[in-house]
Length: 610
Image (cartoon, rainbow, N blue to C red; front, side, top):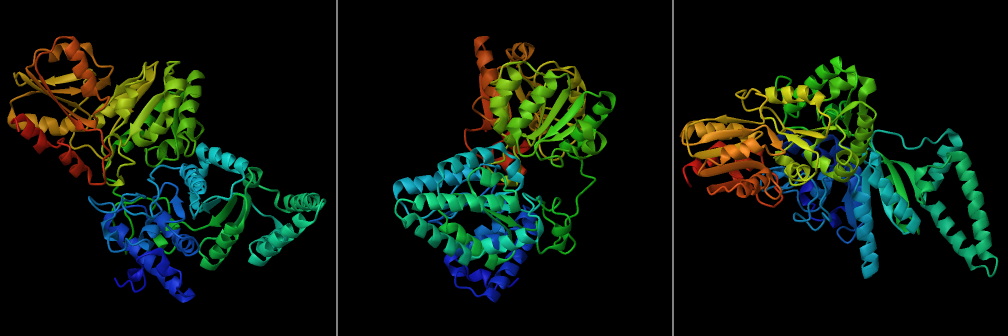
């Protein structure tokens, strides 16, 4: 495909002199590039299509990297990457050794901050802005945050702090779904047009300077006129939460009109207090499939761009099995509740939401609240199941300790995307939950290997009267060779003095390797924590133990097991294969398993002593 203008953009400076018609063509080319690349590689499409003009306008008015431009989550930063010298590498996005699907400073000086999770952008950008000010550096920082992120409490912590500080700072709210505040009537529409004209703000600044220059009474006059203006404005607009927090509110602005966006950004740069610019965009803009179904096209695997993305309904995942089984449980027990943090589809709860609307709670991007809310449900006699991605549960660790575990409340944490997650990269790998969950007293952790095990453990979870975590990987099972026995661990004997031990998804690869070499016993742990005393006693009889673990090594089950074995006098050789204490970059899940010696071939090599 020919990208006549986009191919010439090496830095953001290259787009500042483009004409209106050239900008329109550039935006068209960006959309074509996004659709072509994401259809080949997978990734976030609808959100990026909706922020093309917004990103172009930002880079025309602000000067990256002197001005730090931070996108909340960062999954909508694809246009930003294209405008900051990464067009030639853009075809590698979300591939091993290629560009990240999120913002990453290792990749470009224009990516000021690592991103991947939501609602933290304003805090980070404000810290960067204050650091620049304290060091006397030129430039500012701009935070672009989506309406979905506004459900996260951290956003309001940041807004409250910024408003109280009354610093000159800019937040851009990208609203592609909900209305923040409705302006009613013709007068409101007319006043909004006036407020978004530069002439109005020029007059406002000059008038303020004039009043303040009047000796003795100038300051009082300024305060008087300010109160009159504010009373009239509140009468028409009814104010909004942002102005209540100390921000000047500008908008709403058409997020696909570059001229309007540039105008309001220039106005915001002249303000002397915090500004929030409300930009309205269409998610999936310019691609009919994504516009009509932005949810499906939020994050997709590769697809035919002419035919659109087609989900494989026949491919059952662990998330599907979880959702289906929870519906079965809820049919029989009216106290069962499901909680999600804005991930009902991703965690398999779509059908539960339809069938049990009163017992389904989507709390938005607010994992901390979700954990404590679940604790409250449990305290009130309900049976809460909080479905959450492993990497997102990290955000609720304090609440898990303080609000759930200390009181031994029976909250069931159903942890999706445990282990490697592939192309989403370092911010989303589910490698830390084992370490932090097993550091918490009163916590029990299961790691089912197969669909059957997940289903049976969920069915048994109703009787739990203390905190419970059930962790399972992304995607589908490798085969159905494991049926749940109800045991804490299972032993597959080969009458060997060598034992291969593991849990979760890695068990498929380990069993394949043991069946190939037939020189080791295979032990699969089902309840991975607390570590069973009978397991430790059984392992004392082996001369060599190979423990394979799809988890970060520090604080892992392997470390804890070795410690217990040492106390019991184990004299054999213990080899622990896990992810050393590092963050795992983007690659396919199979490549990640291979890299960290957790695939079948690597386990065979270890059994052969290599």
